[in-house]
Every structure is written in structure tokens, then in C-alpha cells.
Length: 219
Image (cartoon, one colour):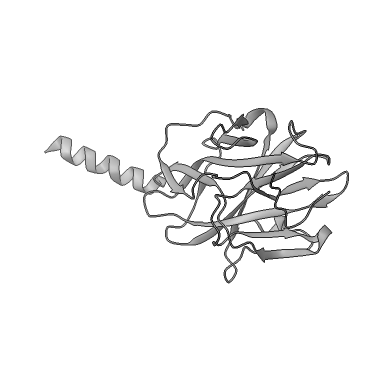
């Protein structure tokens, strides 16, 4: 049985993704590999994996999230009741918060019933699952050019375990915490996690675009 800095190797929300464009792309999985990111109130334990992102002006309202994960110990299918998505501010090159649980410091938290998360097998990497959730009913607006951190966490009882899949990169900014096995929040993983975000311009930008179109029509 392996827990920790795992590496398991071997909405109001709607599951379907919207047609909004990708505003941040951190890559897709290339190998079967994941890091524990699970809230388990029965065992109990709390682990999280996070990675950073920065959005550009005019592409800074998150309306959808897409990520990949794996189940192990013993493996799929899992028994998740929900998934949590948490956005943290940057604290000197890592997310805010610390042991035993940084969740209270999150800038934004979505808790999404599992029925509203699109969990489907990711064919290019057997054993890996793809997740999609439409957040357009409760979007979140980032400040352009500011570094943030995002964590995807399964809410389920052990067994099994769930982990967020990385891209296969051998260096990167991802961080993990798993106090049960002595991994403090936050510990560098030196890899990149697999996710992308889609979205739209912030409301003020949309208004300016609308005014611009009105000017053009008048001309």
C-alpha cells in the first residue's frame, strides 16, 4: 500500500464542456502517473496537489475546468461523491496555507457533485480518466498577469485512492501536501499537472467590445 508523495505508477454545474476558448493550457497526460489529492473523512486523510497558472487580460474569467486523474489501491471504479476545485493566491512561489489543511485560505472553492463531473476514460493513456465541468453559472475572475494556484481534489472514502495526473514533465512548479504520511503543505514535486481552463473576457472587456462594435455599426 502506497500513499504519500504518490506516485501511483504501474454544478449549478454541468458535466459537458462549453464552447468557450481555452485560456490556459498546462498540457495533457503522457504516462500513467498521478499524485494523491483526496479528501477522505472516514480513514481520515487530506491530501492536495496544486499547480500554478497566470491569465492574460481579456482571457481572465474561468468558466470551465478540465483535468485528468487516476484511481488505485485497488483501482477503478472509484467511489467519489464530489470533486473540489480550489484556487489559491501565490505565497512566495507556493499556494497559501499549510498543515493540516490549507483549504480555508482558498480564494475560490467549487464543490461539484460527482454526477455533474464528466468522468470518461482517456484513451491515449490507459487507466487515466478525463474530467470536465462547466462553471459558467458561478465563474471566477482572475486579475490579469497575477500568479494563482489551482488544486483538484476527489472527495471519496479509502479505498480506493484518487490522484491528479501529471503531464510526464520531469521539472515544473507543482506542489503537494499529505500530512498523514509526512509530506507538508507545500512540497515541490518538480513536475507539471495535466489541466486546462476555458473562459471568456471579464465583463468590462465584453462591454468595451460591445461598444466597439456599436461604433463600427454607426460608422
